[in-house]
Length: 223
Image (cartoon, rainbow, N blue to C red):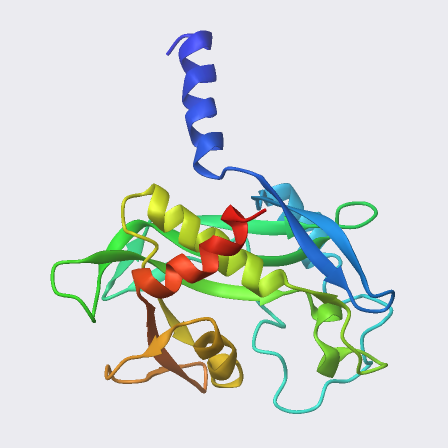
């Protein structure tokens, strides 16, 4: 492969995660702040997640049981296991604030999976959608909201990615018990599929249909 071919190849990879400026809400000062959705690189994982997420000064010294399910995750090695196989996926992050800390991250498949709610339709699978620990009130020393909008912006980007891939914004995921109401408020439907038991936690299969996806993406289209 020539140098030019390499540049073209790398350019195509970078285009798969199209960066986007977003609006978040900084609760302590009640102001909107800008953030950026971008690729979650290995360097960011090591320096801004593994070295920083759980060492922040605003976090409690000890967390109430049960402990956060992502406390010991290695974002380097996570993959999406689905029906006995591994889906090709992308790691996505939101950065905002001085020094560009990673305020939230998720994994989303670039391979499609079959819809449960509509025969013949396909969507993308979302996994590990989490905001940084210091944005979670129950993990903070002061118990107060901090930077808001991380999860919604990541989910909306996933809708955009699904639409860009030709799947009409349809998404599937396994919702953790603490976040079920959050997902329902954003339009996801619980499925009749059997719950997923993983590392002692029961997850509920859910799906976002194109109509609900449209309502999420309309907020971006209006900006």
